[in-house]
Length: 236
Image 1 (cartoon, one colour):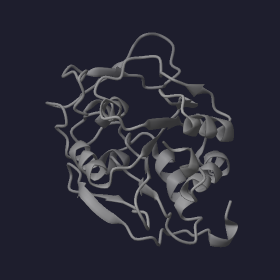
Image 2 (spheres, one colour):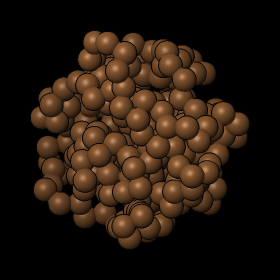
Image 3 (tube, helix red, strand yellow):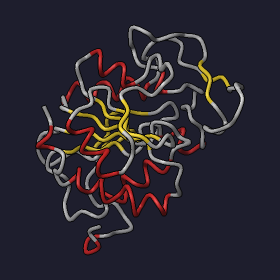
Image 4 (cartoon, helix red, strand yellow):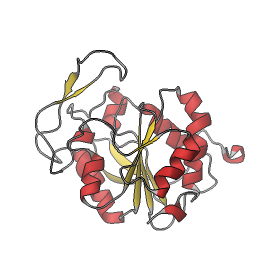
């Protein structure tokens, strides 16, 4: 951990790339040079640990990353409301225009390890890419063309890398989390599927079920390594 540069505020410039349903700014921290890696946090509002951990990693740096861009809150309305979905009640990670997108609600558990088969319904949108947050993220990626995306989620405690890539193995080794090539259940309309259909590699880093304080000690140092270029030699 870079204790010398720890700050309580994020002093790096952010740039808007869209607006949420409620009109909140969708912002990212752009790299100083080209964006080779994009880190995406806060896509589900019930996973604030992803946003806080990425923010703490950025706030531990002396200057913005050279080649790593960061979206701290892909779903700011959900983070404000404390909901998985956005202000329309749509799971943004099921709203991407993919070959397998489905209009029917999908089911999510109240607790990820809850026994039984009962799930709560959540919408996927009125059409593929119906939500402003989805369209804005697609546009951001189209404009900056990252070589790799790392999507932060919780709390499945694994590194989900369908390509079993050197970057995925690097991340698994440093986090101590198992590397899997599939999550074990269908994810129609997911960001990962959309990216795969376009040939864009996505690694989903599923944080373990830990407190934000614990993750600050475990996940943040690895995020700092990525921000400082530690993964770039493994791309391609």
